[in-house]
Image 1 (cartoon, helix red, strand yellow):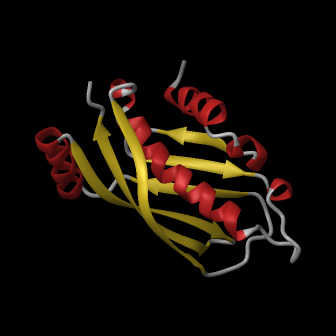
Image 2 (cartoon, helix red, strand yellow; image 1 turned 60 degrees about the horizontal axis):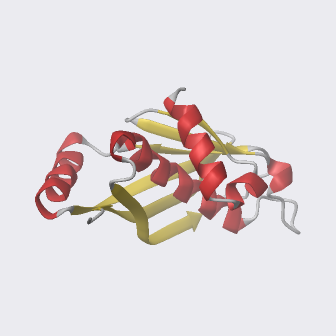
Length: 150
């Protein structure tokens, strides 16, 4: 089974809202995760995508990047979000995709070293959603990866 299929199966089995959102992990590599969702599942009263859906899908893209990078450690770690911030720049009126790319090597290495040394690490990840070639949503979330005890 591909990494993408494993991530999709996990989120649909363990995060029920992902089914209602219609989310699909279209790409899952250690460097980049892309999560898509259909407009019609996420429409609001203004005939644009609901802000809560945009927040959920961008969070999922970032979470998915960590999940993909630590897939070999599943059952031994927990991935949680500790805070997030989102900027809704433009309305979205179509199917959409959130993309999270792994931060530069220095940031990622520092994060992994902290996890190895302390059993927990924190990292800020960013995701974007574009509409007509322009950034419509800019998201930043702080995530923690924790080694399970016992």
